[in-house]
Length: 312
Length: 262
Image (cartoon, rainbow over all chains, first blue to last red; front, top):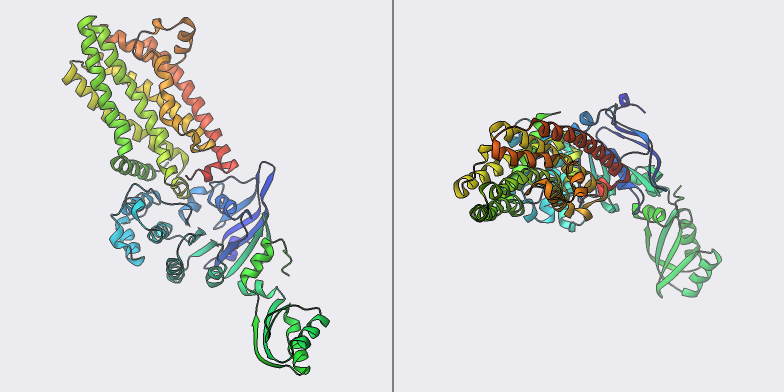
């Protein structure tokens, strides 16, 4: 892959060692224009270290990062001018007002008509009335909005977002996601997005990269990843003899439980579902309800987090 | 180097200074109280000893503030951003470390000039001590040498903060006082034990304070002392820059710089 293929960010064999601990172990990936790519993994997988290296605040042990076809190490200023960052872990200067904070960053990015730009974004994110308030005095949700304004000030082509909705209540998190989706629609910005919330990743990401112990263990669309898990959970409600159902499932070596005498929960595979339904019906059991739970992105995450990293 | 980005950090420094009672107390209020106390002590000593001995105290105090304010501004200025978890935000923007340091040096210099002028005016009006008696050239030489020394010290402390984090933050405003007795700010260097005098003469401010006391009596410029102090300052500043560069690089490699967020 190269810049001419429309990649905004390319990462090649990125390695980071902290002493004898290898935090990031030779990862490579690319982010195309206009896409939201999720970077997921359990705690300690190397997500934040990767983001910090991509931003230049942590040095690389080896590897190469290029933005817009430019070597990041040699063109730091040009690259940083065209990207930005938002995280719930970083805040702005607490003692000064929102307006003052944004004015400082506008100057750092050499933005023309900074005042108009700040006012326009503040209106868009519905915090116009808070511009003169001290940053410390804002609620978590308001701070997140201000952080997003900061991240959009320079009209970036790529934003790195490290758990931007962490510690927000569901309502504010949802509003934040709507704002991100809206920003993406209006400015075609690309985003590298880390989160522990699989639902939001599923909602906004076009592609997902799973990291575990510093390595990429899976990379696909959210749907593609869930399809790799062949397991499924089947719940049947029935009218008939419980022993007959149990005997059939034991014969087929299917793990199961009976939540009550007329229902059975079966951990199985997608392939087995028709066989199980027909098999039970053929034994004179009337199935009154069928519920199939397909694997979610969370199941993929849990498999990786628990060391069952064979999602293929 | 971008003057716009240096200006951005200066604007931030202005806003923080304006909004922080701590900065106002640490810099403006402390300087104000110190000049008043030293003014009265000087007035008392002038009465019981001689005019020069009494003046040494207030002279040493005024010049010492040049070191303290410059160094405080350079080292503590970054702590405000670390405490607010905003430091890495600044470096995620296209700001270079050189621009950042230059802005903090400039900010320190501006604060020093303002506070020095303020306390000098109080010393002149309230305690009949006119710092201009040293002569403009002497004053410029003293100011330059003391500022250079405080920048070296501030740079090293900033590097240590980046390297090991905020657990040593008290050094940012406290370590400078180690140099107050060593550089003979308020008394002739001759009163120090001989072994300590060796250390004192390895420190540029010692020459400044000695030369300032001479100038108070004669009004002459001690070019030898000015040159030695400047030479030592160049060496220290070079070493401090190198030490800072190494510590910053190490902080980036260990991940401490990114973790320096509260």
